[in-house]
Amino acid sequence: MLTDYKLVIFDWDGTVMDSVARIVSSLEEAARLTGGLPLLSGDELKQMIGLSLDHGFGFLYPDVPLDKLGTWKAHYGQQFRVDNTTPIDMYAGAKACLSELKHRGHLLAVATGKSGPGLDKAIADTQTSHLFNATRTADVTASKPDPLMIHEILSELGIEAKDAVMVGDTTHDMHLAQNAGVDAIGITWGVHDRDTLNRFSPIAVIDRLDELL
Image (tube, rainbow, N blue to C red; front, top):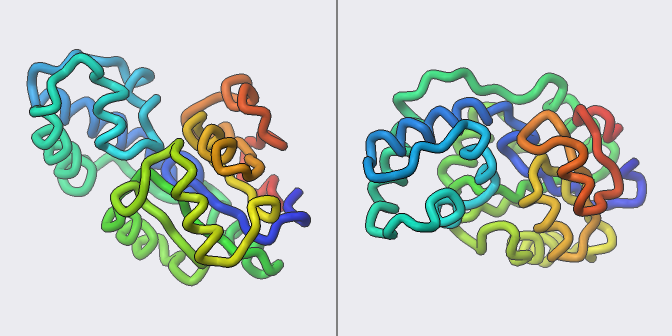
C-alpha cells in the first residue's frame, strides 16, 4: 500500500495511541470544573480530537465566551496528565508496524493536535523517538486542518507532496491531508467510522495499522 510513498505522516491520538477514552473523560471533567459550559455527550466531545485545544474549545463551545478558555485548558491538562487514571497505550501492533515501515526505508513523521510537551512525553513513554524523522504539534504551528503542519514537515524533510501520505482516524486528518495536497489513509479504530472518513476520498480506509504493511 505504501510502496509509492517516501514519507508516512501519522496522527497520534486515536491513530497510534489508544487514548480516546482518557481524552473524552478528561474533557468531561474539565467542563464540569470550569462551570458554565454545556454538558456534552462523550460522542460530541470526541469530535474535537485532533484539533488544538484552542480550536477545540471553539468547536465544542461556539457560544461560550473565550474568557473561560484558559481555565478550561488548565483543568483539561491537569486531568489528562495527572488526575485521570484511564489507561492509555499504543494500539496493538502499532509499534511493530512503525518499526517495520522504518526498516523498509520510509521516513516517518507525526502531525498532531497535541502540545509539544504532551507529544514529547508520549513518545518518551512509548520509546518511539528513534522512529520519527519529524514532528509537528498544534502549539508550534497552525492547528488542523490548516495545511501548514504538513507543509513544514515536507519542507524539513525535503519531500514533495506527491511522495507523502497522511494516516489518521478523524475527518480533521483527512481534511488536513486534502488541504496540504497529500494522499490520506483513514483508520477506523479511533474516532470516526469508515463511512465518515470516506467522505474525504482517502486512498484507503483500514481497521488496523498493520494493514499498511
